[in-house]
View (cartoon, rainbow, N blue to C red):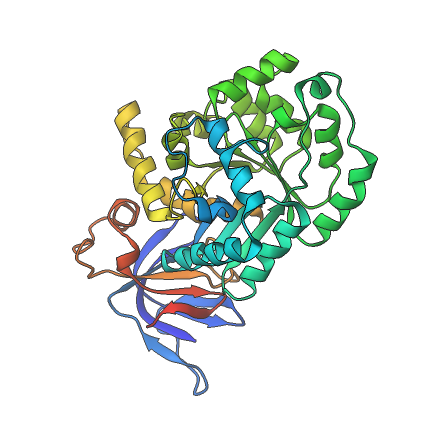
Length: 396
């Protein structure tokens, strides 16, 4: 396929090019340069008036709770999403799999229409939960990274005693990891150091929630005398989730020992927990990606996530942020943290991208493409979505 006369945001710095050609072969970006001649067998499409940007990477979701949208709206964080006694846990356990699958599929289609080409899901429910999501995805052309979890959580006294991972759970964890891309651990406050260390020896992707709430930070110090983040790092995670209330020293340790942090500002705010300090994260050397978190709390919409983060951060800290950095969090940085050839339009990268109508009512005239995408664009501006070199939504 040859895409002709298109504007694009290219490379890891999302450099704006007003007019170029993009050749796609074998699901990757083969050549990007003006005046590429198409072969007779090659489909050629004139895309004048469109802007090609990398497909969004929604780096943290829980789509299993799609059936519980806005339940227990005014409850505390624990009452809503605690992995053991929260409303979410009860909903997931008491809802027939067929019903869960239908609403999970709806969320997947919603993500595609909003330009999300890859999502990373913390999948509850053990092996059955992973297999259910894989069944849903067999019918949806959306790239996924599934981080499974066995239903095993420890009490405070077990954490203080540093109780080990039980032998009877070993086979369950082994079978789980055969079917998914890694593990997504609920948090340090539900696991002893011994258990976190056991999980650290698994060979696939590892991620963990950390320092999401003031309560969780306080609980870790009260239970163990150590910060929640320092304990989470016992997992040797490839990345951490949230870090809304992480200290400066926590962030420096995270920068040294992980690939980065996935923040979920709308979810944190909807839970009345504030927003992460992205300026301090950047100064600490952390790579930051974006996620939309629980569907029961948020719509899986990266346009809204970027717009909210850009404006609320400036409103609180009274400092201008380059919108390009926010857009990188939704694209380039997700690819870096996952170590996948996605999130970038460049030679040899997987051909995941969004085609934006530059003449859309809310965008024209587009004087600053990065700002326009971050705080003006929406699903309505998308002309088409491509995953792996194939148009899977819309048309050109």
